[in-house]
Image 1 (spheres, rainbow, N blue to C red):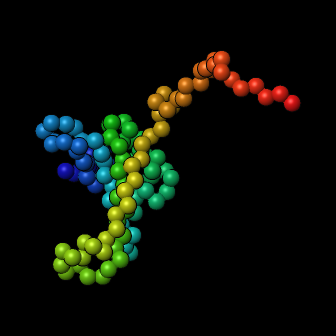
Image 2: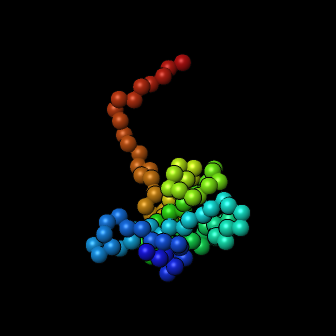
Image 3: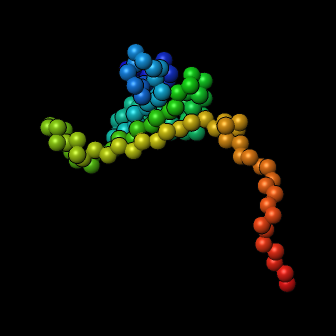
Length: 113
């Protein structure tokens, strides 16, 4: 389905769209010359995309597609494509906070000099 509402190319679902909301906003990037899709080339673009996705409870999924072959005449050309996927989420300090409580232990080894 189209992801234009979320600033992406597509949205992806974990299950059928009638059962759940989309979980991913997908941006497809290509290394080919003349590619009009030159998004996420600077930090401010990445920041804006992750902020938008975070605001609508989506994970940003970036697919980098590169082609090593030249012919696209048959389905066998798919073997020459490489897809690298990256998921990008906005850092949330409340979810990533480490527990800094001190654990008292009686079995601590003592070193004497």
